[in-house]
Length: 210
Picture 1 (cartoon, rainbow, N blue to C red):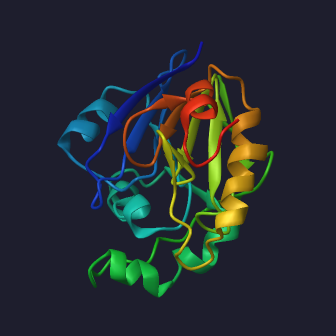
Picture 2: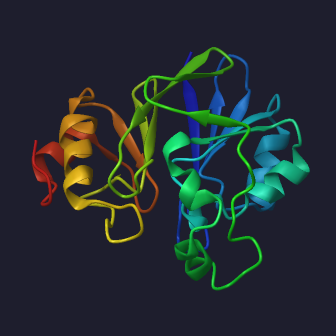
């Protein structure tokens, strides 16, 4: 029992798109669907079906390929943070991120999630932690010793807080009071860059020490 994680660092701004699969049922979900390509489609084809698209926050590079997934897998549920609807559905920051492209507004989510909500992927429970700061509604998806932190916590860094609805102080509190309270051996899968662990960040992150 657990999750298998595959990372595709191919989003429009180098965003990490993750394909996660429940080991017992082989049902899968895509975390931060910024990238859609033949390699990830091939892996989905080997699964028992794409159940969810899971969005950590409402910036364009993380949802850029949402519509491609929804067109290809119309039964997939787009689960997005309830606190980021302002960004998802018309923030001009996203128009800038997208270079004026036609898909800078996120498709409408069919499930808005909040603190302590649970998403069930096969036999795996995925818990939502609200981690605002990079955006007002940023969330982290946690399951089986894994944390998908979006742009809140990176290896040896943290997310920017100078975009609309961002707050540096709030972001620092989210990391210190929420993410650093996770078990030390939790693997952090960030929105950009390589994976890390909570223990490593608490000891070494120059922005926020544990």
